[in-house]
Length: 183
Image (cartoon, rainbow, N blue to C red; front, side, top):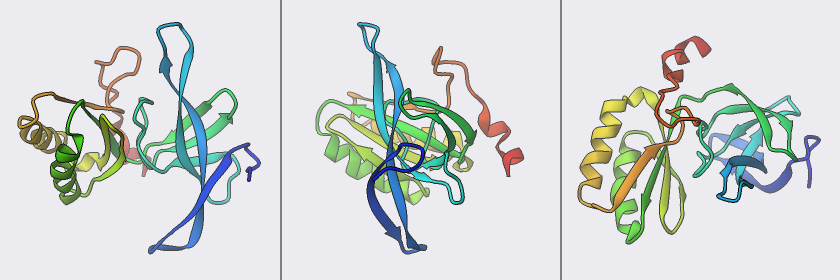
């Protein structure tokens, strides 16, 4: 099934807070460029924003695509070329955790702690975890938690997915400073 924007329907979901089923679609996002110079795309689940045909909300934070997190609202410009415009941030931070071995052990420990702060595990692969957690929890609290847990797993690294400029990877985007103005 396709929407008028060309999105392919994945499945129909419902939640206890929304008895009406939400239509979930997959949308390709440019995740980067491979060593040969070819684009690499990540397929992300989105839901159509009510009463629109070209606005979507990310269902989960991405693993590879930078500058986005669960709940962010986007305008679809061109599905076939994976063009979109960020309309509104959700306030969620995307946290990506990478580990080569025994990721399940780390996931069990870290996920419980993230959930206690109101965050959630959005994606788990063989070597990566992706979490969403609202920035209002505080960067220091989040970073202290990650550091405390990861010290027991020396081969683990973590990164924010939507805090630093995707171009240089070091310049803070500082969207959270203006977040209150979006309300």
